Length: 93
Image (cartoon, rainbow, N blue to C red; front, top):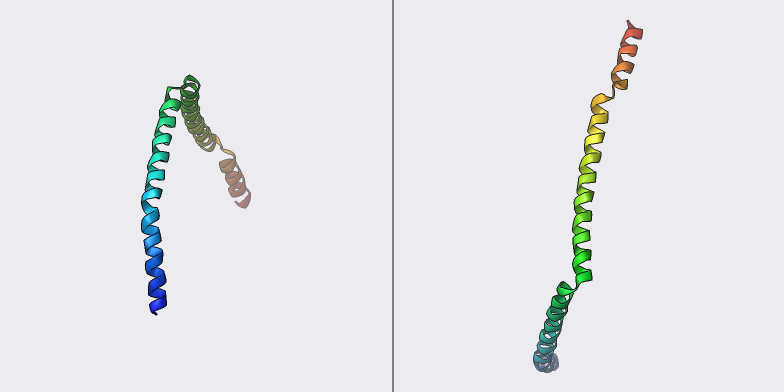
């Protein structure tokens, strides 16, 4: 049991030494990421791409709405079901 506690304490010591290094690396990488994001936001090509993507999403949304409206119109104006039902009822009588 003492051996396990000793190993765990040793592991904890190693991790406590590594934590500041890891945190520093993390902070450095996050800083680089923010700088890269800022450069990207200033890039004209990226701005155009982002605007095109927004327009595309808007058009996709409009297309979906139009397809739903067309499908609903098809249901509203499809009298074949009623026609078949009337034929069936007429045939039974």
